[in-house]
Image (cartoon, rainbow, N blue to C red; front, side, top):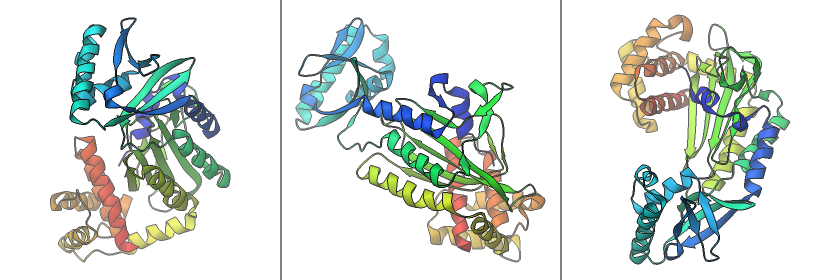
Length: 368
């Protein structure tokens, strides 16, 4: 299977959101955090006004704070009004709609509050407006831990790619992106090629987060054949993903996953990884395809693995048979999981495809 998360970042990020080293990205994220201020604002005190044909949030002090497009969208969603519609209105009319919505919500829930994240650098800018249940994970805390991971294990590096998101340009370090909105990091360890495919496999992972509620915190680990100049990951196998929503103890959970699970994966020796691959290759699911299918469906039920149907598993076993030169014995756990992840590429919807890939990766637990 192929992974396109890093490719999307490479193709869409502006130049000022691209970084060549983890230290550069960490420094930028620290600046964003240093300029940030948080305030818990009661709904009854939430008010916007038209300011130079724009919309600004005004607090008790009367100092206006301009809204980013993202914050505008969050405030619009809070009152149940489409942001795209409000943006087309004159600022004075959009303000009336928003303020009416805030008042109605405050009348219904007088104790309700909103978590406002400001950017303070000369003037005020509202970066996000989330619920009081939102648990912020700062991008700089994530990059700081990744920086320490690299310091402890220098083999983990961000891969090369064509400069400026343009095919055919000169190659430069890539895979690291951050803004006042979110961050994304792509690291690989190519210090030793592992057994697992005709050309061997390397280890890699993605980490992403958003300070403003645009996405969950996430970690995806995988083995892969190669990374091309536009940062598409080719021949990905054993894909595993963890997502943590920004609620409750999200901050603690995120750092636990980084500090324990990801650290364990990053520090795992090549021989340990090869041993796991060997176990999966030697794990015989059955003497026939039907027996293998039954064994996998039993494992899916036992492990409570969602998003894998009998039809999808059967399709994966057929691909494994056709690709025996790549995956080895199609009736082994390694061959079956490889076939399932490759067959998922025919699913037209990315979200559903990713769910199948993650579910297939969980089946590797059978051998361990």
